[in-house]
Image (cartoon, rainbow, N blue to C red; front, side):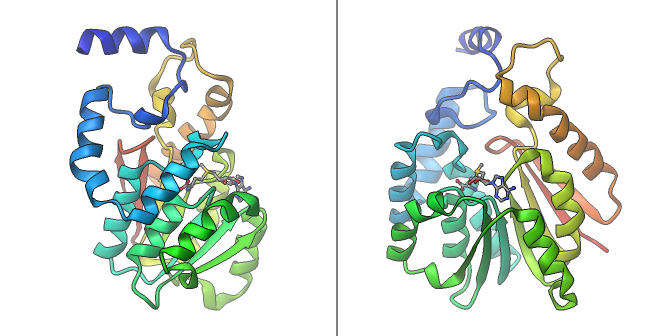
Length: 248
Ligand SMILES: C[S@@+](CC[C@H](N)C(=O)[O-])C[C@H]1O[C@@H](n2cnc3c(N)ncnc32)[C@H](O)[C@@H]1O
């Protein structure tokens, strides 16, 4: 089994992943075990419906995997988050995970350049009864964040911010969301292991989009590691998620 996986890894350009294996774990069997034992039996029926609907969409590789959705839900409950934000919604798997985990008066400000993707998932989010917690704003996230920052009242008010949009802007997002999250609050950056490419020698075969964005992710990881305003924890869940707890 291990030998087969090694061979598979050696022959495959980095970034070629399939839907049944959206994880950095090398063993298909182990990942299926996690999904089937701990994730799918606990998945809300509307999350399941949204995941299955998204699987049929041409850009489905962008979707947050179910085990990561479960992690986000757990984090939100652990820190009793009420005021949250998501940058990068797509069809809304992580958004629905967030909205379901929030208390009934909780809020998630959801930013995405593409409303059409969000509208694919919206009927299912409505069916789940949590659409009232979502404030969706269509547009480029950077100017939307700058707008928020113009109002001093927004600073230090978010309990949880999940960033899952254009990787080349993650550092720009960090420079803004660090002032919007409260001290003691959490930022989660998705894809910080970028299909494992961050640790691969540069001559390793990689899909173009993986190679093009790899340096941005490496730069972000270095920046987060030395940023004294946060404590960090990098988890190899999904494509890698770095949790940053604001400490000052
Ligand atoms: C990886 S997907 C998000 C996946 C989502 N979290 C989920 O649970 O399925 C990235 C999303 O970021 C959005 N996006 C890309 N660039 C953006 C930008 N500059 N501002 C806002 N959203 C952006 C894309 O439209 C896409 O929906």
